[in-house]
Length: 78
Image (cartoon, rainbow, N blue to C red; front, side, top):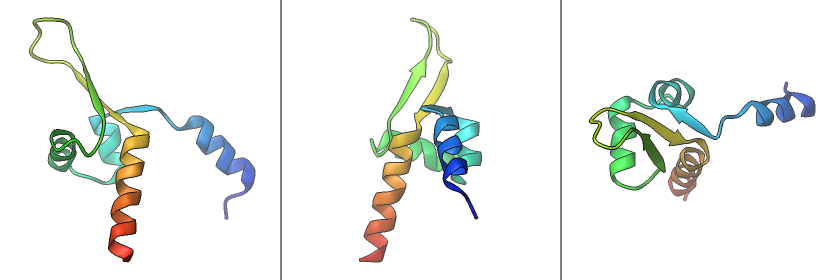
């Protein structure tokens, strides 16, 4: 059982942004599904790249991912 101290430490350690591989591990969602959620506008993300570059680093908002999953869970309980 988690204590209040454990919960506070977890909250402090929670990142604001996740890279795609981290989001896959943390939320158990496939890479394809993450990109679908991004393109549909269901979760927030940013791409870090220099002007003119094709490749960059995609970051996912932890809070928007949690919000999406909570909304989905609420819809399924109705």
